[in-house]
Length: 191
Image (tube, rainbow, N blue to C red; front, side, top):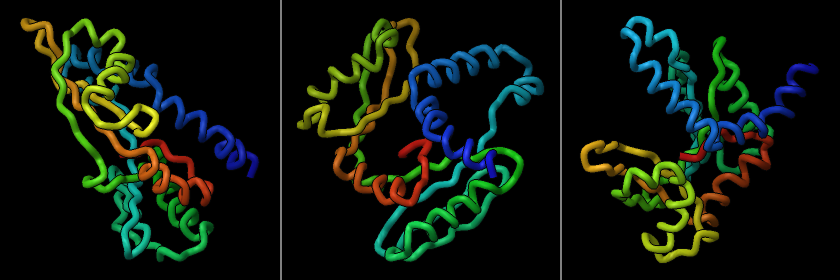
């Protein structure tokens, strides 16, 4: 029981680390280093984590585990008590020896995607550059949205990077996350 309480206490910190720039950098750096290994050794260094995806529609909450221990979609009624939602999520998260990330899915219609081409020098402070780009790329103020980005490619000859910028209105993203937080679920990501 103490282990479960410690795990629940530590979950928000682990989730914050997984969302951090440090985690992105270490993940990228590890991938770059591992790419120099022969393929059979490369497989040893890849972190394999399952994902439990959760999203809501008119029929209720839909949960599905993907990865090494897949579980078909389970639906929880939209008016179910928070404890029921948490029990279903905990059951899916607890399957297998490896951990799983809990990922809330936003409907694609609620996410704005922008494809940016930036100078390679911008990669050093990419989060800051993206914050400045929000004003130019959207009609919203930075405090009105939640955003994330990913580097899609690097053109070494042209000294440019291609970046996908993903933007969702803060109110809509928070409306999705609020019932999950109310059920005591610590998300690892919103996708």
